[in-house]
Image 1 (tube, rainbow, N blue to C red):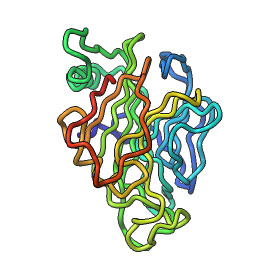
Image 2: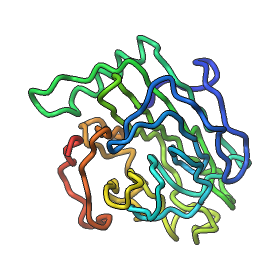
Image 3: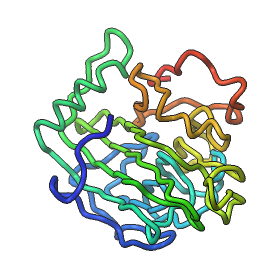
Image 4: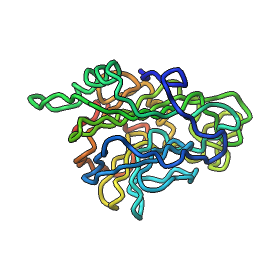
Length: 250
């Protein structure tokens, strides 16, 4: 479910540190997020791609967040790459990747709408990353992909194996990486109003993102974000998770 990543495809990597982040990355194309165009971003070790400012915070908060903090959170949790794993990122205009993105995004638009044809992508991958205070070898692998045709912008969230939800600073168990305040997944627009919490966020069910989808492909979620309008209530509890996936364009 993940797109190619790593040094062999030209990825750069963040430093192996706790609560680390990339330098500011200037984009080859503007990326429109909730109606605002962004020209740069940061890839944060703690499972966040942020616009405007880095996000070193290790305790996931429910959206919307106060203050101007626009970001994409594939899996916001207390990652510690000193204990294992890598955080990779790259911009790409590779024709093979863009063709695959176009194919994978086709189900994410309403019937009758023009299917997306991305001309640019940004791929951030958290590969086998450990959690803060880990006394086990449990690791997580996940990915956030930003894709744009210059006007329409999408985010794909891809989940490989998710073995932990919580570091010990958030009351997680050092041996299991579970309990406490689990990871948050979704989008925060930065305007204090518009946001989206992926169902199961900040509950134990967030670990099942690799088995769920809003596209019918386990582990893959896609959302149009240039004019994203979904505003959700509190994250659903595991016992009341909808059996039918959300429309990715809602």
